[in-house]
Every structure is written in structure tokens, then in C-alpha cells.
Image (cartoon, rainbow, N blue to C red; front, top):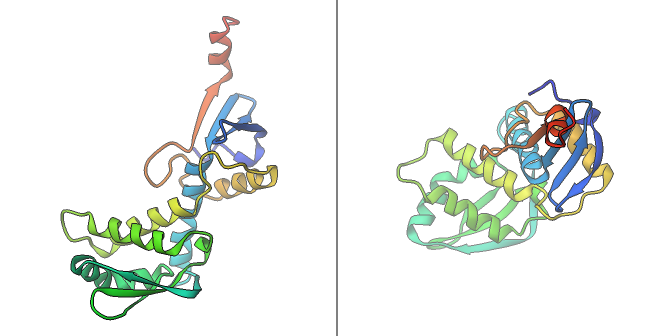
Length: 199
């Protein structure tokens, strides 16, 4: 997969507001912009966590969010407080079954904090068995990457596409997103010519 250098491809345009179309000497390449950005962010979060030692960069909220939880959810969050803090999400208990969210990861300041926190709770609660530290981290990284990534049907400028290509080139596993969906699909020129009965 690393033979493909995204920044060397010729960018043709965006298809269906979701797929970035590139031309290479071998054929056509479609990139799912959401899956690609998800992969880039997921790897960036993991790298930041590894390099920064304990904590990812976080951004304090001007107005902290108060979240009322069920007793089960409250227990899950209290158990995961240290992991969340390491991810840039600062949470404090605030009375019975209530917490205050004080900060979110710096890369996700455009995401609505209450909705993000609610999804994190669901992600950590919907398990049939207790999650280990590593599993909790992976689940939260995947969710944060999904929330922070550009969406389908979102317009991207050529500069943004060029930056995404550079980021993909610097990413270790650029063939799939954290959920396992393909980031890009290639159409070989020979196959295209066969479809048009040229070969």
C-alpha cells in the first residue's frame, strides 16, 4: 500500500460530494474523504498520545458542560476518567450521577461537546464484558477520529485535498479507516480499456 503516494497523483475533482477522484499513470483512484481523514486523525491521536507521554492536547471549554447520567453510565465514566483525561477530555464528578466536562481534544473544538460526550458514554457502555485500558483507548480514538473527520457531502478546496494527501502519505496504514472500510479504490487503466472494448 505504501507504494501509492497520494501527493503525486493528479487531482481531478470531487464526485458525489464525497469521493476525491485522482488520475495516476496506472488508472483512476477514488478516495473516500471521510474514511481518509478518519484514518489520518486516528493515527495522529495515537501518535500524539505516544509522543506526549501522558496526555493529548486539550482545549478548555469556555462554558463547561454539565451531563446528567444514569448510575451505570456514571460508574463507567468514573472508571474511565483517567483514560479520558489522557485523551484530552477532562471530566469531574458533580453531585450524584452528574459530571462536568471541562475540556475536549484540541482537534475537536468544532464538535458539539455534549453530543461528543454522549457518544463516548454509549461507546464505553455498550459492551458485553469489561473493557481493558487498551480497548477503551482504541474505542475512544476511533470515535474521536470519526467525529473530527470531514463528512461526506462536504466541499473541500484544492488546498485541503493537497493537505489530506500529504497527511495520508505520512500515515502508516492508509488503506483502511479505523472501522476497516477502504480509504481508496483503484481502477486499473487496462480494466477501464477492457470495459470500453479497447483492449
